Length: 107
Image (tube, rainbow, N blue to C red; front, side, top):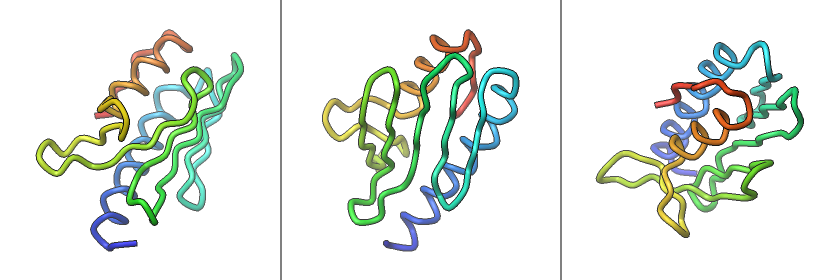
């Protein structure tokens, strides 16, 4: 794992954990341990978000849309899906709002 990837991905997960814990305290259990972020929604379903060092990607398992792999786009600084170019923050924001009715600010 390169130091740059590790620092960048860890900062991303730290920020997500802080913001999700604050925004979703009444509707989800947020657990961030060992570099793995779990968001268990009270209404059912769990998001798992973690960094994957060998590919230098952030992986997301979504109860709504399945598995995703995101790589950092050096130009924009955004984490983009490796297949469709979907933005990580936009995907999570949209899905969590649909599942909880709460607009979470992750960016």
